[in-house]
Image 1 (cartoon, rainbow, N blue to C red):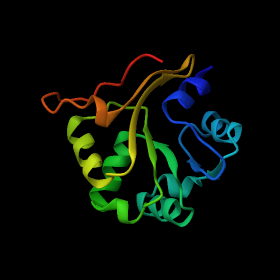
Image 2 (image 1 turned 180 degrees about the vertical axis):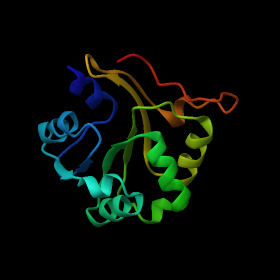
Image 3 (image 1 turned 135 degrees about the vertical axis):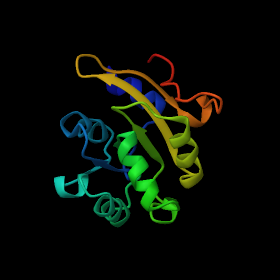
Length: 149
């Protein structure tokens, strides 16, 4: 059920290339159900933002999931990341609160990428999710998670 709810937010298809590292065991099944390719991110790349960006670029990844802290670290090093990741169509953010400042920087750095804020728990999986561009309130400190799924 949780996968179906996420497919309604951002579906996958054959030809998509999904990099999985955070929550690997849970994330690996979703792309496979739609015939997409799974790129397993090795631990050394998960802990090295430069190596992670190199891998995402080399494998022409179209979708991945990361924490907001990791995204902030990547944007600090690569403010024009879209040049390195032109194939990235969707970036799921999970595991932490997304600040409005980070959202603004990500929107600027990744103008062609959907930025999806997702809240989940291991007991129930995804609970709420939404596209940050559709929900951002520049007066707020934090971005909303999105509607219940």
